[in-house]
Image (cartoon, rainbow, N blue to C red; front, side, top):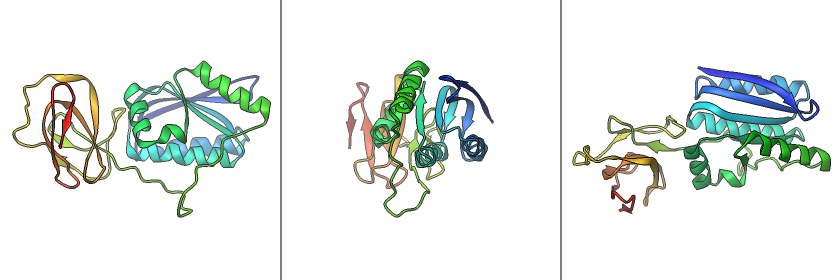
Length: 217
């Protein structure tokens, strides 16, 4: 379930959409319709406040990229704020921080949007190599049951599943924050919470994560 509400700021020109709950394949259509309604009312300066967003799936990430493209294509501005640290790190690894405008606070986001409004500028739409608006994000994470499925922000993946190696150290302490490991072979991303032996669920490449978070393939 996803909770969506919005309010207006910046003399009524900026729409701040506050998100709560889960943004995944089931709830993404609800958010897309919500933004469509805002654009239909010419509300094209939009901030997503993700402070209360508990779960972001690969489908949710794809939707965010798509909405960025839609809003920019409408000569608008789209900014994300208050993302969890884990999602911010993942976006950095995937290079999405170079596509999306991401700030730590709502105040910073509002400042950026106001500057665009004052200057009459807007970010360029996200380009797609094949012209297709669909965006696929493939990420896999290590769950508590030893399986790999999902992406942060406590996210799930709709692509692939697998299992940690049987000799994985189940007794080791969890890291203070999960580590996102890029497979050396297939470049899939695996989110691991503790040291031990792992197997990439996409290509079966084995790797080991040490207690100091060093990754050995």
